Structures are given as C-alpha cells and as structure tokens.
Length: 462
Image 1 (spheres, rainbow, N blue to C red):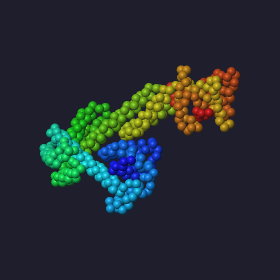
Image 2 (cartoon, helix red, strand yellow; image 1 turned 60 degrees about the vertical axis):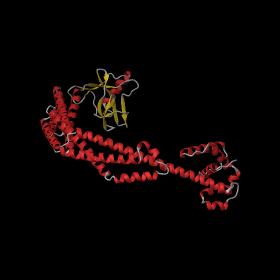
Image 3 (cartoon, one colour; image 1 turned 135 degrees about the vertical axis):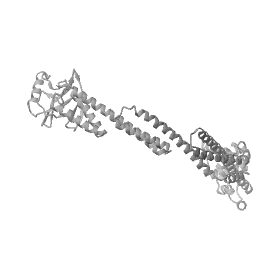
Image 4 (tube, helix red, strand yellow; image 1 turned 90 degrees about the vertical axis):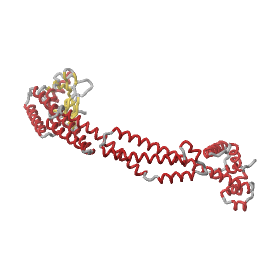
C-alpha cells in the first residue's frame, strides 16, 4: 500500500481521537464519514480514498505494534528526537514529513478560523454603524415632529448632531481600512491580525462613543417623556368633560375634578411620574364611585321590592328594618364593603320573601321516606315542590355544618314521637303517604309553616 504524507496525517487524526483498531465494517464507515465531515468543515482537501487507506493501515497488525504506533505519535515531537528512534515498518523521514504535514494542516485551520473571526467582527461593526444611523435618523424625525420646549429641543438637536458626526467618522475609518463590499477580499490569513489592530486603534482614537450612547439615550427618554406628557394632558382634559356627565355622587365628582386639575398642573410642570400617579388615582376613584352608585341602586331596588311584599310575620318586618338601617349607616359613612354586604343581604331577603313551595313527604318507589340515626334521631324525607316541579332550596345541614342547596332532604322529628310513627302507619297501608304535605313556605314569610311537629334540623345524606 502506498503511504503518503496525507495518509499519515489521517492516521495521526485517528490516533488523536483515541480510536481503537476498528475491524467492524459499519464502524469503519462511520469513522470514515466523521473524518470526511471534519476535514470538509476545516477546509482540508482530503479525499475519501486517502481516509480509507489510513483506516485500513490503522487496523493492520503491523501498525498495532507499539513501535509502529510510536512512530506515528512522534510527529508531535520535535524533529531532532524522531531521527533517534526511527525504526520499524515506516521510515523516520516519512514520519517527519507526515508530522510536518499534519502540523501545517492544523496551522492552516487555525489561521482560517482567525480570518473568519475578523471578517465576522468587521461585519458586526458595519451592522452596528447601520443600526446607529437608523436610530439617529429616527430620533431626528421624532424631534422635528415634537413640540419640545426650545431649550430642550436645542439640547437634543446638539446631541443628535454629535452622534451623526461620530457615526460618519466611524464609517470613514471602516471604508479606508476594510470596505464593506470587499471585506472577504481584503482580509487574508497573512494580514488579518494587522487589519484587526488597525481598525481597533482607529476606532479607539475616535473617543467619546460611550458619551454619545448616553446622549442618544437621554434624547430618546426626553422624546418619550414628552410624548407621554402630551397624552396625559389630553387624557386629563377629556376625562374632566366626561366626569361632568358621569352618574356618580357629587362628592366623588368634586374629588375627580380636583384630581384632573392637579394632573394638568403636573403636565404643565413636566412632572411625568406625579402625572401618571394622578391618572391612576382618577381611574380608581371613578371605579369606586361607579361601584358605590351601583350598590346604592341595588339596595334601593331591593328595599322597594321588599316593601311591595306585605311582610306577613313580625320577623320579616324586623329583618327589613334592621337591614335598611344598616344600609343607611354604611351609605352615610361611605363604607363600600358594608354597603355591598347590606345590599346583598337585602336582595337575599327579597328572594326569601318571594319564595313559595310545599314540602311533600317523599314516597317514591325505591327511595327512603324515613331515616334513623344512631337509634336516637329520626328524620322524615321531603321534597320542595312548586307547581309540580321539584325545586332546589337552601338549608343548613346539621351534619355537614354548612348551608347547601338541595332538592331532597330529611327533617329531624321528635324521637319516637307522633310524626314519625304516623307517617310510618300512613305509608304501611298502601306504600303511599296520603297525608304527604309536611309544610308550606308562603310569600311574605321568612320561614315555612309546618303541618307536622319537627326539630328544625336537616340532613342531606343518608
């Protein structure tokens, strides 16, 4: 087999990878593909046949001998040492040539990488200058269309002019040293370091880039703040007109108009943060005032609706009077949470007084009519019915300890009393409870009127 310098260079790469002798065909093909990709990426012109020869040589028995492998490894050692141990299958001169070729290849790869790095760095410089130019143009346009005061406008224009001049100087430097359209042609493996150094020195000589960045940042913030102040001024003027027509109480209206005047003053004094805070306070005050009006309206509606229902029992009258007094007190003190709570209670009272239904003892086939707990508690199962419909009502479950909505529940009756026994006898005759009306909830009443004696306790599970 003809062994060239390139073949030995590939052998060195295989050794560098720490690859064991590969005898499996598929593994050899994988190694060949990996090396071919590596060389193409590095820009080395190593053909497939050379790689195949190197792999075959690497798997051969003579090469696996220590002396022969050491000869290949000696390409990493100084030339003076290689001549002293030359022996074995490969000649010392061939090993030296292979080592030199490998080192030259690696040096070429490094130089190309550095060349590419400098090219990319200069491309980035050009992009940065383009971006800076667009930023300057944008801020210049915004400045021309703004209504900044004369002193601020002059300061901003001066900063933009300095930034424009600095950017033009940077463009001049790059054009002289490395024109954008010919960066790849101007930079080579031999001169990349010099070009990079020249660009760096020239740009360093253009002092003040950080200051330019700060000044452009200040101009951008000034324009942005001026724009926000203008929008806030428009907001305060517009909301003041709207406030006059809002359906809110007069106290809130006066407070809002005062806040609008304060906001306009902040804008006139060019105080951005206080103006923003005033805007937030106005929005919050409007929300609270409108909520106050809604609660007040809801409460008045509930009171009117309840008043239209003639309370048929003293308890209902007392509940209405108590809640009405609580609402008036909350409204007078502008206690929003108390107003909301009282309005909800008034609405609940209205719903309760309007509610009507009959409690019918349950005798449906396959379902319980009575329930016994712990041999000490007895319950009769009922369903709230209205116009033939089984409705859901709220009750306090004594076992759960909470109010639940139920369409069927059991009412506790005196243990071994007449209620449980009479219902039991009624159903025993024909498996139907003929006297099945346990109680009635009438309009205008808070509570149910019962036909059977009970303890007023309920359960929903059995």
